[in-house]
Length: 150
Image 1 (cartoon, rainbow, N blue to C red):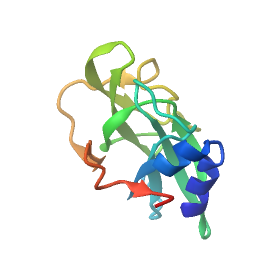
Image 2: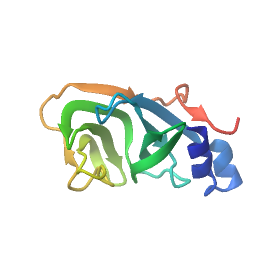
Image 3: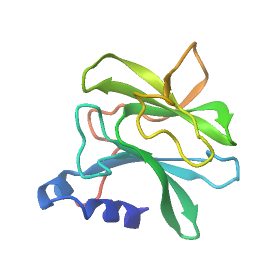
Image 4: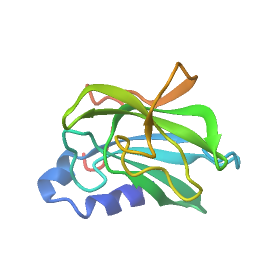
C-alpha cells in the first residue's frame, strides 16, 4: 500500500507531498474473500472544491494495484449491501464545486470500473435509506489519515 501511495506522490511538488494525507479502508468489495483497499486523498496531487479522488485498489500478491478511481468526492465513503456485477456499491458525498446542498451518491460497478465522477450518470443520488457501512468518516481533525512523509 505504501508503495502505491508513494507512487501517487511522485506527481506532487515537494510542498504538496509534505502535506499529503490519505484515508485508507479495507473491505471485500467483490466477494472473493480478499479485501480491496479504498483510498481517499489527493490521487492526482491535489484536492479541490469537489473533494479528493477515491481509488479502488485490488491486491495482487504482496502489492496493490489501482483498479479504478473517481476524480472527486467527500467522506463519508461507504459501501452498500447492493451489488452490480458482483461488486458492492460504493457511496460518497457529492458536494462543493457549485453543488449545494450536497447529497449522497451511489457508485455502481459496471463490470470493469466504478464511475469516474459521483455527480454525473451513471452515478446517482441515493434514494431511500439503504443500509450502509461507513468505511471512511468525514474527519476534519485528520486523526484517521495516513501521512506519507512525517
